[in-house]
Image (cartoon, rainbow, N blue to C red; front, side, top):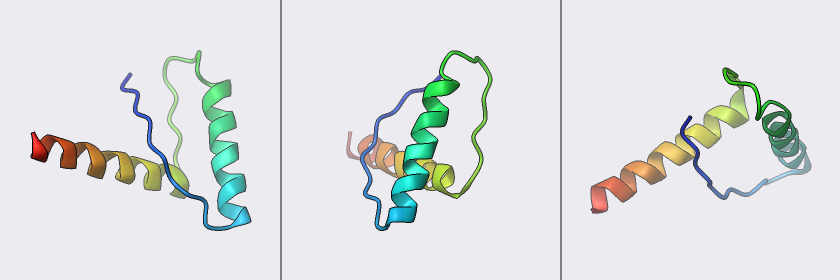
Length: 60
């Protein structure tokens, strides 16, 4: 499993609730080996993580 930590900002109460729910699901499923979380916020987080990691690789 690849672990990354990113910081992002919730721009509304709905975003905040969605990020909190995503964090709850991640905590609950942490001990399960094969979990896939699919949805808009997860796609946004993956895109943010991939863009930042590719930027860091490009600057090396």
